[in-house]
Image 1 (cartoon, helix red, strand yellow):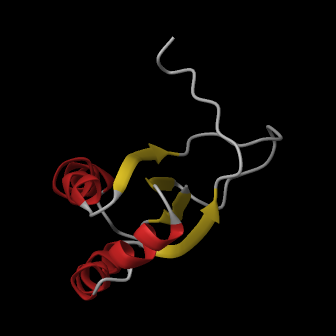
Image 2: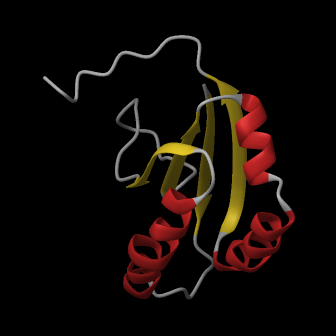
Length: 110
């Protein structure tokens, strides 16, 4: 299983409420509809550890795919990359991390 994690901030002067309206609606639908996505979530970072530290990022998105091959065929597809070029203009300081999940414990169904 492959995970894409995106950490980022918003550009100065961005209305966070307007951004969240877009991000939680249209963009979340787009993420979850991406070919091969098995799970996706979006988080607002409001604390970090240790307590006296500040997080360098305000937002985090996670998208999981069944395999690296499925991820690469989906994420690097021309239409996805073209859309990303526009979407990335809405954010600042993005870091895209691609990882292979070695172990996963999911207790959400309990």
